[in-house]
Length: 595
Image 1: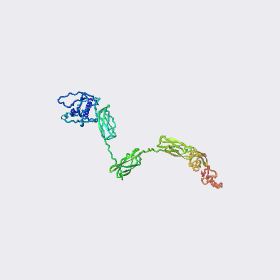
Image 2: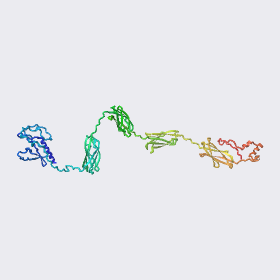
Image 3: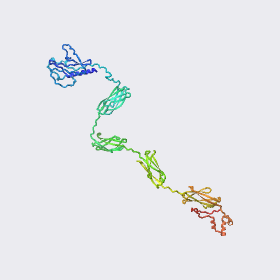
Image 4: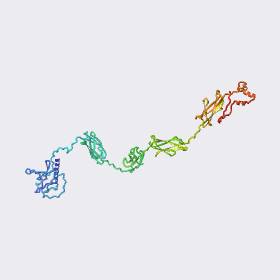
C-alpha cells in the first residue's frame, strides 16, 4: 500500500510541475533555458525531490559526467514546492488565476520567451519537455485476510422471468447454488424496492418479486449472494429489462352513456342509451364487470338504445359501465357511467299461527282447550291468547311450535257464539269461534204400565197385553215376559201405547199368572192373569137332539119353552164389545170359543 501511495504522489507532482512552469528561466546572455526536468524520484519506497541544478537531460560537452546531487527525502504528505520564478530580465507577466491541471503538459504560447534568434541558442531535441514517465511497477505484496476478502469458493445461477416487464410488474426468480448446503441468499437489484433475504432448500429457491413503480426504461442488473452460515460463498447475476409503457393516443371524439335504473338487484335488466359526438360512428362496444359479456351495439346516426341483463352472482357495490365508440373499426371515443348493485333483502320464511278450540260447542261451566300451532317460529316464543271474557293468557311454544291453553266457560255465560284470538308479539295471529249452548233440562224417568184384557180367561182363550208408557220415546221396544219366562216384544207408538195379542194354552191349569213388562232403561211393570176351568152346560134341557150338533138342544129348548131368546142365548156364548183398559183407547174384539 505504501508503494501505491508513493507512485500516485509522484505522478501528481510531475503533472503539477509540467503544468505550472512550462519553461525554465533564461540564460544570462538572453538565451532560453532548456526544458525543466523532473525533480522527483523514488528510492526505497520514499518519494524525494532533487536539488536544484543544471538540467539533467543535457549531455556534457567533454563526455564527463557531473556528480549526482544529494538527495533530500521528503514525507509523502509534504505539499509540492513552488517552481522557481523567472529571472528579472524577463518581462513580468500579469497574475492569472490558478488553473486546474491539464491532461497535457505542453507549455502555452504566451508563456514562451521571445529572444533574438541565435544559431547556438536553438533548443536541442533532447532539451524538449518529455512526458512524465511511469516508474516501473514493483511486485505487489500478497493480500492478507484483513485487506481483501477471499474469493467465493462456490458459485450458482440466477434466472428471472419474464426478462422484460413494465415498471411495477411482478417477476419470478429461481436461485440455484452449486453448494447444496447453502442456506440463504440475498437478492438485490436497482429495479427492486429492497434487498430480499431468501431461504434455500437444498441449495434452491424460487419466488416472486415486484419491481419498483418509478423505473425508467432500460436494463437493470439483478444479483444474488449465496450464503452458508452467514458467509458469502458465491454470487450469481442476471439482467432485467424495464419496458417503456406504450402511450395510448387519446380518442379524438367522445360521447355519452346513460343507464337506467342506476341501482338494481343482481340479475335484473337495465336500459342504456349511447350518444356519440361523431354522428358518423357506426358501432359501439358496451362492457362492464356487471355484465356477462361485452356487447356490440349498432349506432344509427351516432345513437343507440337497448337493454342488458346483469349477472346473477354480483356482489353489492358500484360497477363501472363503459362504451367504446367506433368508426370503421377504430375507437374514436369513449363514454362511461356507473351502475349500483343493491343488496337483496334477506327474505325470512313467513311465520304462521293457527288456533283451534276443542270441543267447539260447550255448556256453561264446562272445560275446553285452545290449541296453537305455528310454523317458522322459534321455540320458546310467547303466544298470547284472549278468551271471550277479555282475559289474557300467555304460554310459550314448545320444541314442536305448539302451545295449549286450558279454559273454563263461566257458569253465567249466555248461550251463543264467542271468539278467541291468539297472536305473536309483532307477528301473525288467528281467531277461533266457541259456541256456548244451554244445558238440557232434566228429563223424568220413563213410566211403564201393563194391562191384560181380559184379565180373567179360561184355558185355551186369547187375551191382549197392553203396554202404556210416559216419558218414553216413540219406537222404544218393551219386552214382555210370560210366567214361563218367554219374552215377547212390543213397539211403543207415537201415543206411548203398545199391544200384543197372546194365547192361553188349553192345558193351562186354573189359577193366577203374572206377566212382566220391562223398558230398556230398566223400569218394570207387572199384571195378573186369572185362568179358570172351562164351563160346560148339562141337564135335560141341554140334551142334544137331532144328532151330535153342539148346542142344538139349547136352541130347541129355548124355542120350545119360550124362555129367553135365541139371540140372547147366542150373545151369551159369544164375547164381543169394546174394552178400554187403563185409558188406552184400544178396541178389543172377542168371540166365544166352542168346546
